[in-house]
Length: 338
Image (cartoon, rainbow, N blue to C red; front, side):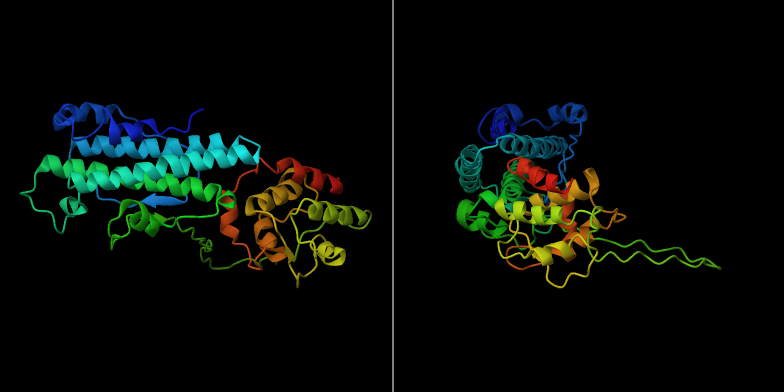
C-alpha cells in the first residue's frame, strides 16, 4: 500500500489540471459527473470543509471527485500507518506523508494560486462579478477546494496519530507557514463539534412511576468479593506498562472497581485510545465488570483523568479505535482480572 495521493496530485500537477486545454470544455464533464458515484467510508472524520456550492458541470465533477478522493485517501493512509507495529515505521510514514508530501503540495498550491491568480475573490458570491471569466472562475473554485482537501487530509492524519507528532499544525498555520496568504474571515475548514443531545420524553397524561436509575459511581468487578487480589495485580500491570501513574495506590485503584464514589480519579498516563480499549475489554468484550447500561463512558470520565489532570470528554471516546501498538499489552494487563 502506498502513501501517494495520486488523484489529488493529478489535479495539481498532471492530466487533471483544470486549466489545461483538454479540460477546458464544460459540457464534457456532465456525463463524467453523472457517472461518478458517491464514496462511502466508515471513518469518523474530525474536520469538514465548508465551501461554496459548485456552479457548472466542471466544478460539480471536480468537487465530487476531490471530496470522494479525500474520504478514501484519509482512510487508506490511516490504515497504512496504523498497520505497522514499530515506532520507527510509524514515524517514517508520518514524516514522509505529512512533512515531505502534503506540506510540499500545500506550498506548491500556494505558489500556483498566486501565479495564476486563483484568488478566492473570483468565487465569492458577494464580490464576484458576472463579468468575470467563467472558465477562470471554475478553475479558481477547483484549486481552492483542492487546497482545502490537502489541508483536511493533513489534519485528519495528524489528529489520528497525535501522540506521535511533536509539532502540530492548527488551521491558521497552513495559511501563515505554507500558503503565505491571509487567513479567511469566513472559516472554510472547521473541526467537527460533537454535540450530545439528551432525548426528551413525550408528555403523557398519566405517567407511570419512573424507576430510579441505578447509581453508577464507578465500575463493579464481578469477582470483587472473592478475588480482590486480581485488582491489585491489574494495578501493578498497568503501572508496569506506563498506562496509569506510578503514584497510584492500590486502595484508590480498587475504588474504581467497587462501585465506590470516586473522589480521587486515577491518572491515566496512556492515550485516550488505550483507555478506550481498556474499558471496551473489561466492560463490552470480556464482561469482567457489571453492565453499566450504556453509561460506561460516563463512568470512565468519573474514574480517570489524563496525565495533565484534566477530565476526559465522553464524546471523544466515540471516535477511538483499537491501538495496534499497545493492544497486546493492554490485553495482557486485563487478563489479570479473569
